[in-house]
Every structure is written in C-alpha cells, then in structure tokens.
Image 1 (tube, rainbow, N blue to C red):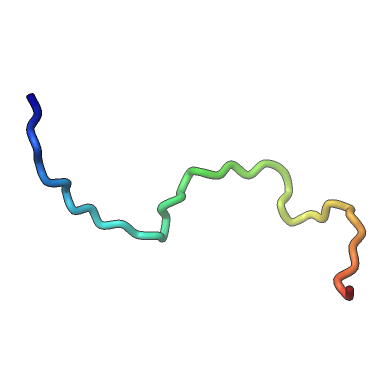
Image 2: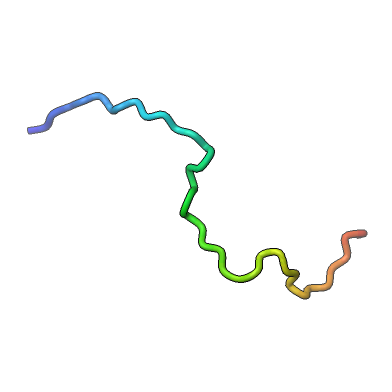
Length: 40
C-alpha cells in the first residue's frame, strides 16, 4: 500500500547551497613553483 502526496514546494537558492561541502587544506594563494609563460 502506498500514499501519494504532492511534493512540498521548496525554495532553492544558489547562494550558500554548497556551504560546508569543501574542505580547504594548506595555502590556496601560494604558488606551486611551476614555471609557465602566459605570452604564448
């Protein structure tokens, strides 16, 4: 037996939807030391 109900209309926002899903470890601003040229 099953009871069918309408799905509740939830408001969804892109702002903050990925909160607490990424863990940053180390320095994300420091360079990697890789030498590259952007003038190619």
